[in-house]
Amino acid sequence: MVKEMDIEIDKEKKINKKKEWIGLIVGYIGTLAGLFGIIWINQNVLMALPLVGRMIVMIASRILLMIVPILLMIICKDKLSDYGFTRKRLGLQIALGILLGLAMSIVLTLIPFLFGFGKYLGNDNGRYYTELWQFAYDFLYLTVGVSLSEEFVFRGFIYEKIKRISGRDSITVIVSSFMFGLLHLFGGNIIQVIVTSFIGILFCLIRQKIRNCSLLTVIIVHGIYDAMITVWTAVFMV
Image 1 (cartoon, rainbow, N blue to C red):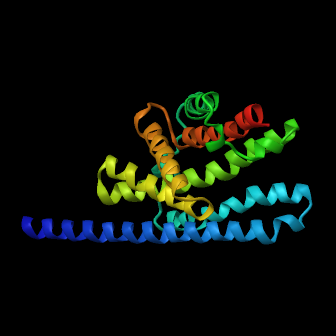
Image 2: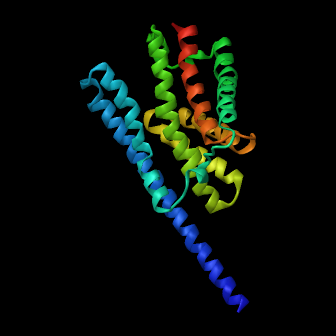
Image 3: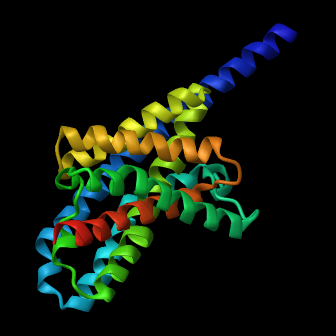
């Protein structure tokens, strides 16, 4: 009787793991499809819109990355808390996000700029922005658009799927970060894949190792880190 129960439990585990594999693969393919949708919109729609329209569509189009993972989350009856969101100590989550984002910016961007490596790190937007509202919008776009969508998918959905499949934090960090890096191959090169994979590992470790750091914290870290690249470019490379 006990042996039969063990067999049933093992069978159920295999079925669940198979579902997680299917969810991971379908979710990642859906994310790539969403990326191509964003690229198409950028190339064929944005420039036909007035400035305000472009600003809105740029942010709104980022939801395309999340559509398939969100649908799978609903189908699987997962909760946002399963992906790293929590209401506990919300103020502390936000404060940690701001502090860690600035710290990452200083170490990984400002210091290299000071030592003459800015040309490898700069964001061209910073060369052309002259008004405060441009920097404010850049921050809004990178936080509400880019970092929210990418962190939900890679440090939320994909992170959780890989963790359920592997059961090991190290594998979860490495694989999810590499998949994050690969996303940037379509708009960059192999160097960008390596760099963004490394950044992805840092984001994973922040969520995993630092107390009171939630997925919201990582979203804020990501947004501030990206936005500050534009700021340092404006300061050092104009």
